Image (cartoon, rainbow, N blue to C red):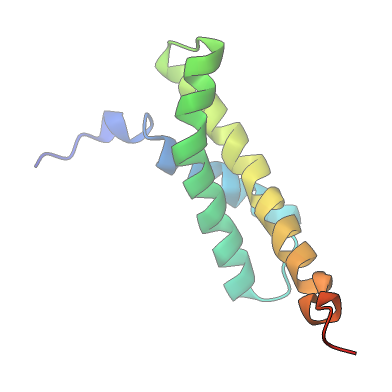
Length: 100
């Protein structure tokens, strides 16, 4: 297995991780554990979603694909943070019909 540094910038996971780290500046999260979780989820979203976005919009150059991964990582961090906050505030026990 070879390590090629020029290919690192083409990985949507790495570029998405960088986008998530940039978004960390204004990211919600009270603890560093929550922030780390948000960053990792933003990178995973970028790694799995940005290739589909690039294919859908016909982005064929590596720089455009990397840009889409960066943007998905950037906004994916905030999306995950918002979903986690929403789930915490949902209070599922109050929605159960048999609990009074």
